[in-house]
Picture 1 (cartoon, rainbow, N blue to C red):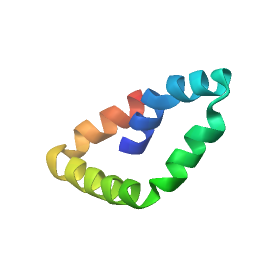
Picture 2 (picture 1 turned 45 degrees about the horizontal axis):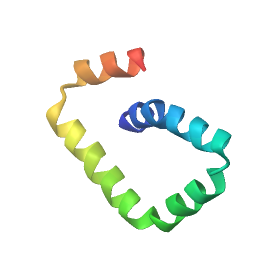
Picture 3 (picture 1 turned 90 degrees about the vertical axis):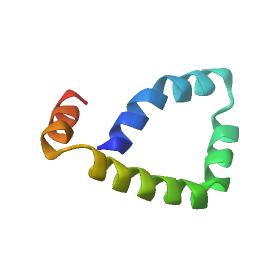
Length: 64
């Protein structure tokens, strides 16, 4: 669920970079950062699951 929230937030940035012709550079940067991304993705999901009750998670998912 948190991945959906992040993607929804970053989508305008990805579109802008694509229009400016920097999409390959952005993709290269993302590929270079895959290890820290996996760690942050895991810790963020775990922390979100610990802090939000299931009802709040369902509400966020429905809104997203």
